[in-house]
Image (cartoon, rainbow, N blue to C red; front, side, top):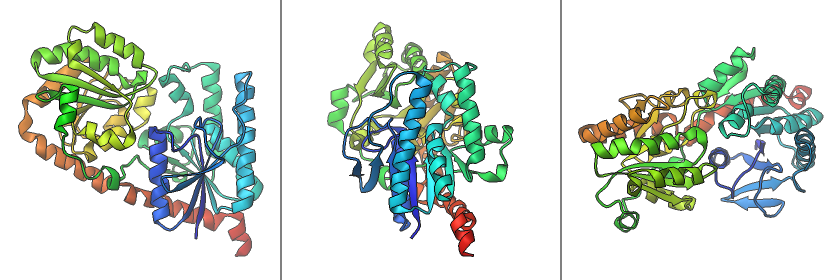
Length: 408
């Protein structure tokens, strides 16, 4: 039985796009009959035991608390603590492969242990940490910290035995840095069709509670970061409501921009057409998808959104919802304009309003588009089949591992 240790930033029971992708990968690998564990670092902020089973998956935690003081020293101390915890677990369980997931701090910690024990390591990048910091408002492109993080990322990629990325944008960027193309596989974001494959019917009681009974509903379900462009979506509402008086915007989730977005909505002349729900339990999300006619993803144009594909549009397609999104690079990898969704210019409230109004005015093609989009997810982005992309890489790494060569 192949034993795989996933080195993670954070995991369930926390809820994020990161943890849901992790859950999908681990569950699909368990279904293959593999022995799968995860270990998180100090950035896993949830309390709990050092070994925890969540949703049928086993996660180990790095003991202690995050280091304090100077940012650079703090991060190196956290790497050292994470590496010690990984080393202890590896000595106990002897995994065949170490599968480290971004950010790069996890790769650095995992590589120390993999090298020490002669275990092959694959490094999976979901976003470049330096670009994620810019997108989250905690970093500046071109700053010394940005440059240093980029250098660490490149070094970690070159030191890894294999590299996985979630989209072609990230793969192309690594190739431009001089990384061999045959070292990189694309393991795209996917959907667990067992979980999202059977949309629930619209709940009239919930619609009444939200004031959506007869509304044309535009929705966003996710985290409220600046790069998501929700301020542009709110700014588009006056134009949309003047064109479609029954239009309402349903915002489900929360995050760093929530307070500012609520203030912007309150100041809108159509504030009564904008509904904030807040965060909802993950097992209730389907009921909010069922309230929405069109899921909107107005991501701003920047390096992060051009390189990285999001997960939420795929979940919306699996739920049989229409999708409208800005034409940044990450969305163009997922959405074929006019076929599986609608693309509009980023950073442009007028373009958002026009695209949404056009969709509401032409309902005749909705059923076909929803069917085509769902078929795309079933065919190309179901985790049950996506997981097979790792298999040839794992096999190659096991064949090239020092232990395998010694036994040959």
